[in-house]
View (cartoon, rainbow, N blue to C red):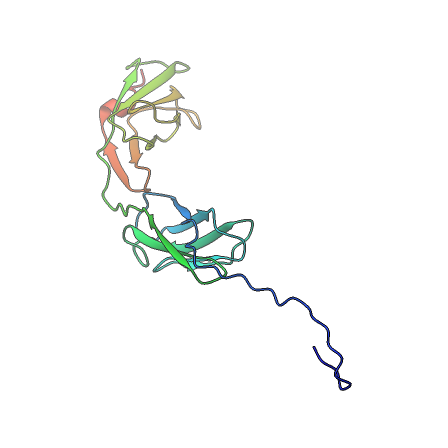
Length: 194
């Protein structure tokens, strides 16, 4: 720097040359799988401070705490895996896979058997439903159903004719982890009240 009297001073002009590709973001989609119309979120971690992520058919926000969040609609925007591009502040890029499964197929109906059957009023009933997909679920009116474990869902209810009690056959709704459902009406899905 020189003034009008020709006096000079120096100061550093700092600059960093960066040609190194950033570490690719790790993007996880939730829920996954999902069916048509479901809002999905891709959470991308490991993004450099000041960096960004873009994923085709997703809308991505800014980096915050080394995380970038991207959103889309299953089926409308996203029908399968995509490729994420991770950028650093210098404009270098790297790519990574964004796995996603679109699932619009109804699950196989669970096979539910009630014990005891028949039963009289006040008896506790257990409906054991087999053939449920991993992470799937079953719901039966007037029964309380637990989580899927080993392809089985166990539901309990009380025999009777009062509100919330089981007085006859019911319809079991089997759901997969993508939200698809299947109805099954069977005499084995409830009790015969004596």
